Length: 92
Image (cartoon, rainbow, N blue to C red; front, side, top):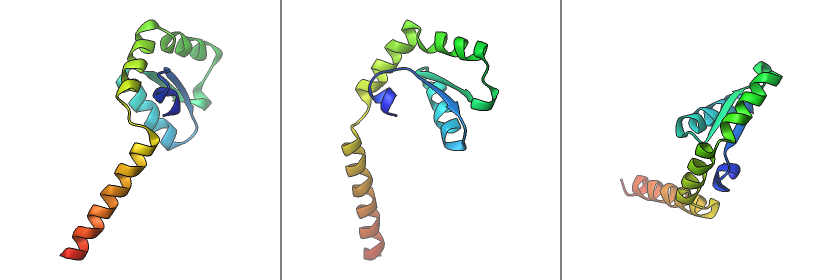
């Protein structure tokens, strides 16, 4: 998320499920691409870099970055949701 928050297209060479899922989201948003690290070749790496370095991907990454909240805003929102949930559960 740091690269995307900085407005940079991202290439993920995944080694676990979390990275694979994040890579799928990047592909769907057209701000990055992803593949399994074990399936990466010199050709696939070059192709992926050409993809994410295209002007369209860079523009889209900058657009998405401008819509993202800061890590602090995310933490505050998550804490608020937990507090609200706990408060409602106690009141019931």
